[in-house]
Amino acid sequence: MHTRQIELADAPALLAIYNPEIIETTVTFDLVPWTLNDARRWISDHEGAHVALVAVGGPDDDGPRGARDEVILGYAGIGPYRARAAYATTVENSVYVARSARGRGVGQRLLTDLLAATKSGGFHAVIARIVGENATSIALHERCGFEHVGVEHEIGRKHGKWLDVVELQIIL
Image 1: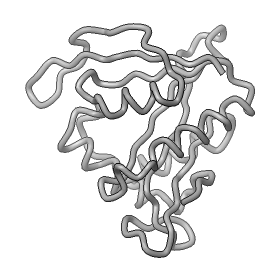
Image 2: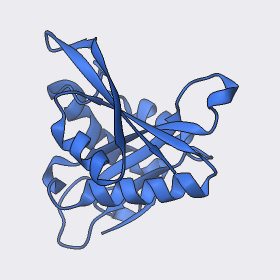
Image 3: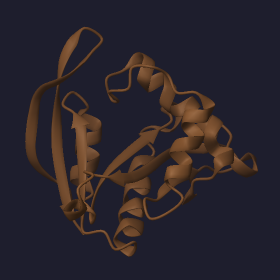
């Protein structure tokens, strides 16, 4: 497994990973599945300083196919934290791993490589905002050096229930 910069041709693989999470879980607060154009727009937004990576599997891996017919095991990206100029060196991250690739270190590889790229890009702080019931993602971020900085109580509603968001942070 290795990581590389996401490409527009990876959009269908991104959809195959992300849309089931929208429909079936609370790990994202999106409520409507993304279209191919949505995925392409997200990828285009990550062609500059706000990098996004994909984890690419080996020849024995099964999963959605991306650019160069590679198996995409997951993806991660950073985006602006807030619009005001003083926040410019702070970003928010996201990590999604294909269900077939979970428990194999894909998330940790993605997040580790993403943090290195983020630091190289001149950013100072990374914020992770994770739904409170996603213990796996919280633990991943803690293993990668993030510290718990707060909880926003009942700020989202999905699948008929109120959801907390746990906020974690790392200084690069």
